[in-house]
Image (cartoon, rainbow, N blue to C red; front, side, top):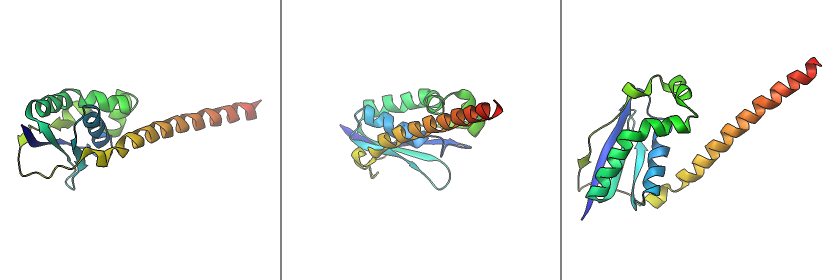
Length: 144
């Protein structure tokens, strides 16, 4: 039976660190047809899902157990994530799962651009790294 559920990602800094992107990507890869992650005005990220109840529970638990590791991977390491938001372990939490049948849950294909943005972000990181290498090379050449 299809169910609708939601939970929240909360903490001092959960927006603009990749939570929404990471969770949406995981939902797409897990083959959810409806769902998404949304930034809320109060600073939390809301995650809504529609699907089989057991799959929803498994996805919620997977996010609860792995979100910080996923964010560290996307931030290029734990130190980078700590630099951006402080110590993530006590500061980022995933709330309990709530089943609510009156939720509006959109088709996840509306958010498939998330995967494209993920690739763009990776490209920007590579570009920044290349610029740093070029600057260092230029300074080395000037010294000679």
